[in-house]
Length: 212
Image 1 (cartoon, rainbow, N blue to C red):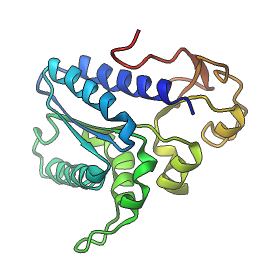
Image 2: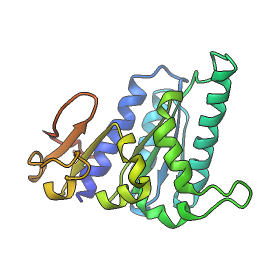
Image 3: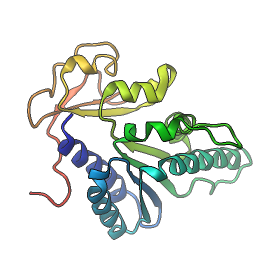
């Protein structure tokens, strides 16, 4: 996959959420699972802080902790909503991960007390997070790794995805078992938003922040 395009699109997506959210109403955890994305993660965090949002950056060693904290927050927000506390999800939470599949070994490990794995927490985040205003923006380096991490039951929990540098045949499963002919040429990407469009379409990917 095209690393430069993936980094730029992930930064753009996170910054777009920040720009549409009032200062102080968004908390962001950024994980640079791939060491080569550390600078990009720092630049994104700096831009988000300029918009008035707290942003914390960690590397792959912190991925398990970030996912566990997000899953715990989701459960707490669900319980608060059931109790009728309207302020339970006042602040939106965003988890941003560069190269999620780099942390697969850490996600497979289970907590000694709860016996939950990082994959369990990831699946809680994708399935139950949006309803509690806890969201994930992440980049996987291959569709097969995304499918493995989410599992066969949870793949449809991804509301939208964008791909760069992959042939259409690799996207067949993600696109609902339909041919993908859009966006597979250089400097183009494929965008599929399940809620807004019937078929994948071509987009021009964003360059990473700080580049020309």
